Image (cartoon, rainbow, N blue to C red; front, side, top):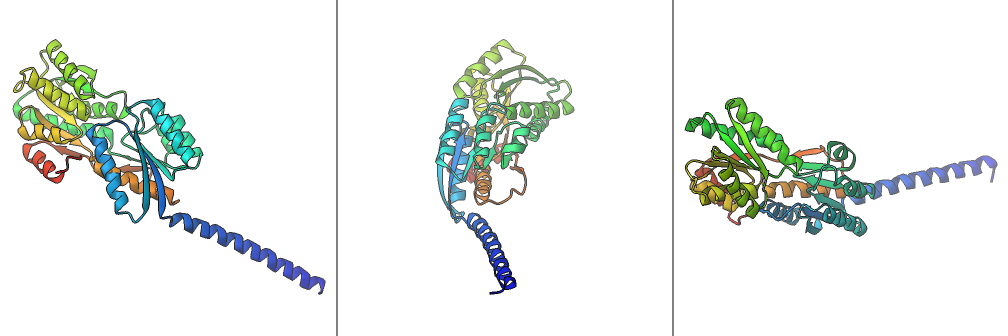
Length: 334
């Protein structure tokens, strides 16, 4: 064999090796993109009805996806240590993706960063970490813009109050402002309402997102601030608690309620029309479906089309709207 012939054979062998490596890389990418089995860790923030809707949405999306999906889910109860422990366990399990409603904008960064650095894509929904963290460590964030959400609530309140001739509303707020999403809801509400009714004033703002606490807090608020003629709930528990407090205090007819996050109990109150006059909601079922779709895409190695995935924000302001919601959600899941 001549030297030239040997050089050609070596060259061909090297070329074949490079082609083989390239083909292997392509086949590996295709294999991941067409993966049919995924395991997704899902963490809910609390046990209120909205998160039952999210769970239902994930289950419905999984059953119709054509993907064999194993879902490992838990509830943090708003406890940062429980959230961290769950995410750490998902990292150890090597799940395909993690779906989470984060407990804290800053406090949740460590666990989500750890998942991202371990090569596990993270999809947030409803709540997430701070903006810098989202940009660095989060695959996608499914959310109804909280400020716009609040604006819709403020406009719904303004529509009712202007029609009722209430020019000087005095407002008590039951908040969930340990979460940034609730702070933004209130800001949007205030800006929209005061733009249309400049003399509107928030005279009390206290935490009360769990139903029992919300009822007692709202009753105390109504007693301490007899000028209050509007209560606002920033979450589902706060809204229902405010409504029950007005009823228990004998203030129906003089105090009205506006709130957030539809449930069957809340729809029933809105349908009666006695106290609750308006609800703004992002469907948990829709959010669950969107979050599952993003988690599956991430698990299959697909690039996110967008960092923020918008969820639809809907206002319900009449008994007819409440009845339509109840018919569409006969299983009670929001």
